[in-house]
Amino acid sequence: MTETTPDKFSERLNQARERIEKACQRAGRSPDTVKILAASKAQPPEAIREAADCGLCVFGENRIQEARQKIPLCPAQIEWHLIGHLQTNKVRDAVRLFQTIHSVDSQKLLAAIDAAGELNGRIMTVFLEVNVSGEGSKFGLAPDSVPETLAYANTLKRVEVAGLMTIPPAAKNPEEARPFFRKLRLARDKWREQSGYALDELSMGMSHDFETAVEEGATWVRLGTVLFGKRELKINE
Image 1 (cartoon, rainbow, N blue to C red):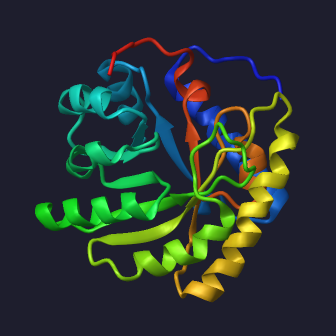
Image 2 (cartoon, rainbow, N blue to C red):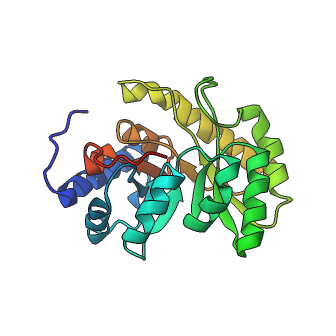
């Protein structure tokens, strides 16, 4: 879908919301069921403040080091989600900085988050990242291992699994992502019956394919370029 890029952030946000609304109409869903997560990787605090002034309140960062530097410079009311890969040696920082982690891909990582949550007196909301495509270059749980991972998560006191996340194979045509979004949604429906977890949240879809993701059931869309334009800030980790 070709769009003219508006100059102002408010205009870009309104355009994204209109596209979500139309996708919801096509799928017979309410737009209220879809939440925007502003993917603010490499965006300076000034851009984040502008986005917050326009009404966005949930932002996603990919790297711990960048988040550690930026978060203190941003509005205090923002809710921060980690959407990038998380190593176990950085879990303590992640639990301190973020309210939600979208990229949990192992029982080992769940255990580390649970331990850090105990130390900090917090219950961490997490999404299990599922490698639906089976690509070796991608992080994520193999679909077959999700049920046992959910069973393990159920034994932990400081972790709450809210839903699932996936990233489809890179493709220019967003329609090529549809089978992977659909596969995750259908698998979710099966796993929720087996596990007892509601798994209400599906974090899937980014700037190039979020409309397709919404049509297939996404409840969180991770939007970066469509909101902010090209990335500006570079912080080495």
